[in-house]
Image (cartoon, rainbow, N blue to C red; front, side, top):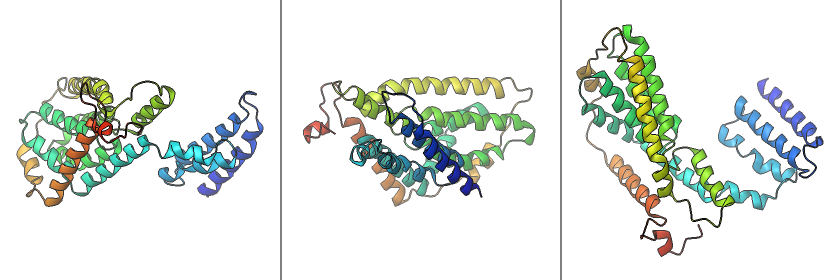
Length: 294
């Protein structure tokens, strides 16, 4: 029934909105608006997977004569799109072989017994992970260990447990600001920068990180201090945790071959991303290979 309602609404939008004249200078504006509304409707209702709904403009724009399919394909399959695809594949590999779990366990085993340090370690791990995989994937990776950690905290401190989840969620969002692959909007920005200012020097991966990373780090520190001030330092009772029991539940075996392969791939990919374009006197490997137009 929900699918039928969504389809009927989308059909009405596609029939009625193109009849409107929003701007005489742009006769296809109303058609573009109708496609935008239908795409948003499919996203909000989730009658189809989001990835499938995202392809609706690819079919509807040429159908309504808004833009040619050949021109539209260049935007859907641009360099920024493949940059995001590479980030998604990297995230899948990290999740598949539990490399994130080993990383988080290593960080937590190095901190002391104070709850502020454990919160800082969780937030830092989430922040670092969300630089290379999506915010949602980073949270899904961290959440099982967070729940296990919270089992070592007395139920009287439910307010702290809720605040800790909130702080870690903010860490995932903040980490996504740091790199072009951290969140899709960063890649879209790089693509738009190239479209609007083609005469300017390329906005490279390294340039983006140099500008965004300090802001992201400052926001992370601010979020940590606010979380500690709100849920730890002003708490009427000291939050006590059984750190030994938590770490014992999270014992890790030896590093597997697959984990080593994913880690090496991650390091190589990061190196290639950062060195692709000019960095000061270094021209970048794209210049050496004659790929500066990409």
